Length: 487
Ligand code: FAD
Ligand code: 2HG
Ligand code: ZN
Image 1 (cartoon, rainbow, N blue to C red):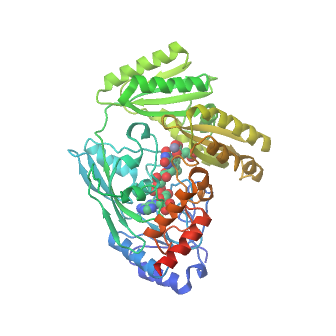
Image 2: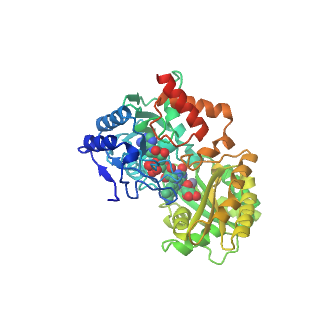
Image 3: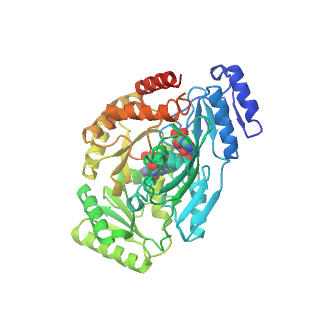
């Protein structure tokens, strides 16, 4: 038999008893995708069992039983993560939140919403919208990713330019420690200076410190009638000029500032039938997507139109469309959000999610293209991302399976180049499995040692997502120290 099993709450005891009777490594079965693989298909591991508790009490019981048997556990939400953080590697138990769903509070007057961890981002946005609020986070995986997973990854997305990252909008968290003990950090206070902020440690901890079971967010009033502009820019300097104009002219109404390059547009239109190119004959190398959304739609649309006029007048844009105030124009967002989906269809994909000075984006993509082409003639480098946040999504794509020559041409060069520019090797997707060994490029050694010490404080037996985030040497030292300390 090749397929592992998924167990609901009734099978929990039996499932764990089986795994521990055989010992996790002796398990002869492994779960089929999607639970043992990630969305990109790049990371595949092994797990004999996925637990899908329906209640927090069942999740706590599952954790307690796993801890008692020293079984490693991988928390999993929607499994849309892009760095392999939710993938079991060596027979860890998968603890999925997909049944722990439901919006538990929508307080329009206070601007606060709460939900259980497995609630999808789309479901949370729908509940907030019904009360005239909006969720300060939006990303292409909204229909599948879970709010617990979003917080665990400190997900970025298209609204950071306006609302900041989740760190600034999470008001409360409910969580379970590795042994099932509840950590109640749920007081939804906007101000709370009572010492160390443990909830901030859990945000972005990628399942290594605790299982997040509930999330409370500050939800701003829904804005009305976003106005959109899509501008074709003749140079990278022009892109930066448009960004400057957007900040200056849209001010607080600026709701999104994204960019795609011509290679991204070609890829998305080639692979996705629902995506079209607004300027099929344009020779422009870059396109900027701006959204303005405030409290007065007509005013925002007027500001956007003035911005577009100014961009044309200064030569920062050579083509453009500006939508009047109205529904969020789906076609332009489909183009931008379609790029990672098209990359998944196109064949092999080498994915780099980095932060660096916007001025340096073009040079990095061009150098990447040179290196990729030298390794393989049909490899294409595409650059797109969150312009307003200094977050470049640099991907290299070619038909067929991954090619060791391309990989060798790109890594570690790309990460070293980002580190040399004092950028971050992970802007928004996290560290997970993919980048654990790269952490020293973005964090000094004392910081990594402190991270390992924090891991031990939360999870002395090192059973929560043990192969993720920390580099192997820090993990080994931390795990050994933790066990010794735990006596
Ligand atoms: P999972 O993939 O299930 O898990 C991710 C990590 O969090 C793992 O380490 C897991 O162990 C941990 N985890 C999950 N749930 C919990 C929990 N309840 N408690 C503790 N740990 C937990 N990301 C961005 O930042 N910005 C984007 O714009 C963006 N766009 C995307 C577009 C597409 C098409 C796709 C496929 C992905 C995109 N992502 C983006 C990546 C991904 O959607 C985010 O990282 C998302 O927050 C992951 O949520 P999830 O529920 O799928 O988590
Ligand atoms: C996006 O912004 C996502 O579209 C995915 O963060 C980026 O896969 C990528 O490169
Ligand atoms: Zn992104």
